[in-house]
Length: 195
Image (cartoon, rainbow, N blue to C red):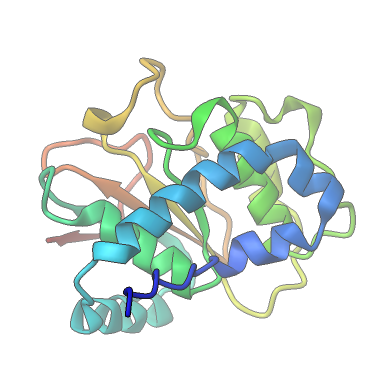
């Protein structure tokens, strides 16, 4: 009997976005590219329940702020970020794999997760950091902090431009930044974890 292919795990943020077809259609290519990476990664991933449990505990103690997860290439950082996004309602941006519309896809996920009343992507969303800042600052009907995951590792990026980070995170927003040990982030880090 042939082996069954692994069942696709669609991240909760992607599911919420799919429920908004007009918004989803604007960023479908980036979401599908990230989903393909998640599928490939999770098909061979080694479960890490201890690390995920520790991260869950840490995130529950944070009301807002930046959590940097630092690792060298090959240490499983992208796998860990995919595992988090696949099993929790966190917005995900993997810039090296999401194509030109990755930033817009992140903004769309935040709109979907925050249950914003107007589910349309702002026209300025293409590479304008203030768009992300404004979306994160908008009142949300979500009952928990909005968690945003960005794989910021410069070794994985194709685009030479810096990532459009918000200057300030509002209360109720947690940013998980995947980065290398020596990488500096354009925003103050509250907690550093090393893999």
